Length: 458
Image 1 (tube, rainbow, N blue to C red):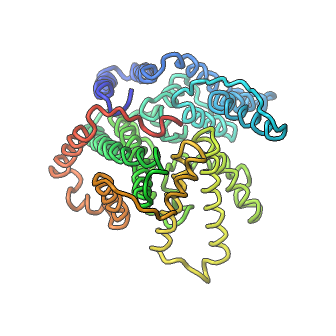
Image 2 (cartoon, one colour):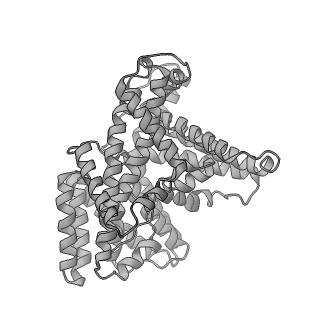
Image 3 (cartoon, rainbow, N blue to C red):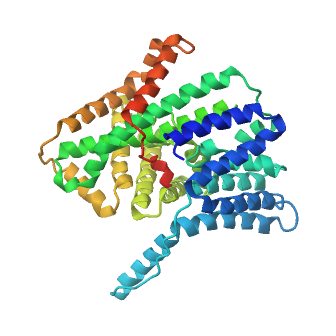
């Protein structure tokens, strides 16, 4: 069930009441059952597979000590990566290989298309379990209780689209659950309200973004720029809105999930952007991939290679397609250039703060074109139209969206959160009233929203 549906509005209070009214020993089974129901509402056929995957990872982690430790660790990694590869990348790999052979042979080659339906949450679940088994291999004690481990993996607020949790962040909360206090409600409801409002605005921006990306050849350059700005903020508000609802839902149950966004469009470099955007994925890529490839320990050349490989694989994590690979490479290039600049030119040629922010914002926004486009040719058509400076009629609705985008851009610098704290201090009636208006606005702007969260597809 989607976070912005009536179903979830019924489901969450039911889980909340059941969790706090049940005796302590029954709360973990209640969370597991609730999470399975939550996932089954999307596709019940994949529930047994997820359960088997969880049990297998939990069992294998206990075999990481002893004579067959490497075999057990390899089996766990192969299991998680294998499931991800089959469902997400099999058709892409076969199609790419057939395309290369066809190019070499000079003729069309028929190849099988399996068309497997991607299980919802597969990327986030496998990354969470990979982090766990790698941490255990590196010395962390495995979780002895299958029940507690299942809560960690299946916990429904983060299950579908993160944040990607570490065992060290969540399992201690399962071992030592917090007692109920009204602070859970005071912290949870405003976070959910914020997420609902963000999602409602994102869905309004989606109308303009879809129009621009749907027909880039038929629109003028200014309207394409507005469409790009609309998507740039749509994806931020959509994904951070999901995260806010996830964090708020978890807080109602006494759990603290890690933050995933920290004003990413305020960044002054590509490196800072990835410290602020999808922070739990950035940490995962850094700790389990970039550092494993050597990080910055073996000289500049190896560092640049590690950055590029990390971001190329990070791009492929988002989707099996050439556009995601190029998007990852674009950011890898940005990170490498920034590191080179910092080591060779920063002292002699410092970039003013505002200029650094503007260049980073444009760099990130241009990357979103390849990310959003259905095909590489669509992305090239969009870029060509954007920089052709061709004229075109702009509807009033597009101009209004353009004004909203400019307001969001300005808001990155004036500090919206500082104004918010001044106008509505924490714990004040004004803040409660403002959150009430936010929920009402969300309901009004997106009546029975049917637009899925963008990151559900990953």
